[in-house]
Amino acid sequence: MELLKSHNPATGDLVGEVPITPVDQIPSFVARARSAQPGWEALGAQGRANVLRQAAEIFAERAEEHGRLMSAEMGKPLKEATGEAKSLSRMDHELQEMIDALEPEVVEDGRLRSTVYRDPLGVCAAITPWNFPMAMPSWMVLPALMAGNTVVFKPSEETPLSGQAYADALNQVLPDDVLLVVHGADAQGKSLVRSDVDMIAFTGSREVGKHILREASGDLKRVVLELGGKDPLVVLADADVEAAAKFAAWNSFRNAGQVCVATERIFVMDDIAKEFEEALGRVASAMKLGSGQEDPDVGPMVNARQRDHVLAQLQAAVEAGARVVAGGDGHRDNFVTPTVLADVTDDMDIATRETFGPVACVTRVSSEDEAVERANDTRFGLGAVVYGGDEEKAGAVARRLKAGMVGVNRPPGGAVGTPWIGARESGFGFHKGKDGHRQFTQTRVVTHKL
Image (cartoon, rainbow, N blue to C red; front, side, top):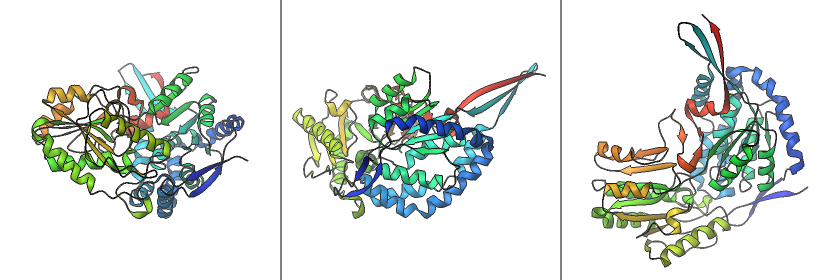
């Protein structure tokens, strides 16, 4: 039996291992899930919610254990990992939102009465990332199950133990074969995509997302993809500089920058640029680097490959003329020192290709028009943020940014009930909110004469 080993990126210690799923067994996993699907669907939305609510208590009881596991397996600070784990137990509101999203709708026009139903698709493949190894599975698995689908779940090969722990908690209350887990890397992921599933939900790189979309086109599988970004922050001349710098540091460095909506490009008006760079540099320099168990501000990169990518981008940027404001050296093992670069230009790789590391890149601009033009000069479009003293003016700038989610003086994610959505090459379909939950369903219209 071949094993997938998981190592702590901060120490190199073995955290644990799981059996790799043989590729030739994946069709049988899908067949088992398909056999279980009619019974799961028959429970109805309220019945399925009643089953899943039982898992909330399990997630609450295991939150500390799950937090320690995620911190050890992917390196994030323990307090952040525990917060992620605790969030899994707070599912009541979202389950009710899913029930509401699935409720049939009646439309009449004086001649006809049509009922719009949202039925299960069948079997959903959920392929999830390592940076939020329990939260992201929940974004896919929970709405898929609530819609009446069964799920074959492949967690990232970087965090298989966290993915398995997530599934184990749900499987304590779910019927057999409603949620099955496949472990492995590219071969298993590709096999699952090619298999007889009805839908694929994936979060990860744009390149893999495009491959999935091509593969799914053969039999028109339904697809939801969240593919990361190169998120801009625009800091207007009347912004609260200290507040903008604190946000920039938090959103550039949290989870070691390994966040899909991390701030990766900062456009600051000339008038306040020096003050902003100094403020951001102070915050970055004060950040504590360490393993997740040491309660740091910033943990390690998930692996050496990701570390090398970030360091290569940093070195190339400096060689091309970027100025180091803070950090830039002291990197060790899988740890990258939080770094602030200024004078970043659009021809640098670090300005165009996703970094996914603890680097804040600052570019000075002379006008709002220039800031908007350069912020939009990308193939990505997940999130964006505008900081400004005049909320109405900042909101007007926000409306000009070509991203799926834009925050004004705050992160880009919206109010509870709004979708999490990427524009351009940052997404295909979306998550969250009623519209996001309905992505996991087949809409059907049944019409009668009045």
